[in-house]
Image 1 (tube, rainbow, N blue to C red):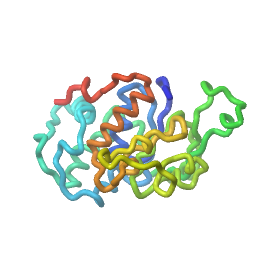
Image 2: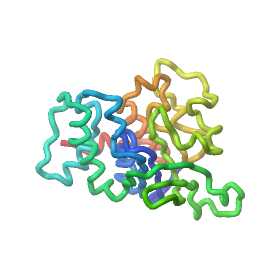
Image 3: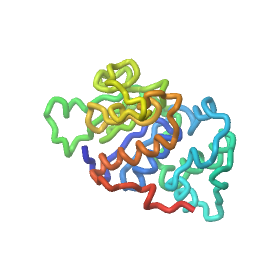
Image 4: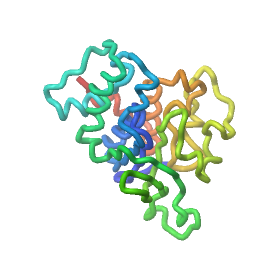
Amino acid sequence: MAVDTPATIAVIGAGPIGLEAALYARFLGYVVRVYERGRVAENFLTHISRAAWVSYTSPLGIAAIAAQRPDWQPPAVDTVLSAQELIEMYFLPLAQSDLLVDSMQVGTEVLAVERDPSLESGTADDDEVPGFLLRVRDAAGERVDSVDVVIDASGADSSPLAGSSLYAKLNLPGSAAPPVDRHNNVDPTRLITAEPDLYILGAKSAAVPAEFGVRDGLTQIRDLFTIISDRATLNLYDTVIAR
């Protein structure tokens, strides 16, 4: 379903996929809120020990950091770094870049995601009322945020959607899912859910979550925003030149 800017997109999870999805949305002019219950890319340390720079970065991310830090130079694409080095050299600078810094809500846990009841009751104009209500908790307490689109990039082993009434409509672990083409690890029926404007990114959308990589996630992000923006030829990874 096409959503025009400056709609508000909630990205749940500030790991590699969540940050890249948020960045793509910001490049397109959307308002973005990134909800992370811990620290930026915190879970990355528990899953990866060492990896090549090219495996966990994107042209958009490199361009965003370079624009803010003129003297910054990325390592050679085949440089192998520790997980902590990748966090310090890429994920943290990306979260602190001009495009994302105001979107980051670190230390904020999404407790529940529900449809705005006024939409479901038919008492409101779809163009005037945001599509989702997020109940979130941070150091100040609980609150409810309104957003137009939800992207769940929280990882394979967790989801704030699991306790919501929307869960039965989603192809998440534990819900009924159609057969998966094992030749394509990314299952598009998991990315595109039955609930309009709510999408699943990352390992939860893979036939074999352990084999899902950030490069798969970048493909998902590109395909997802062709749908959200209703621009079939959109591919920012090809149009933004990273040094």
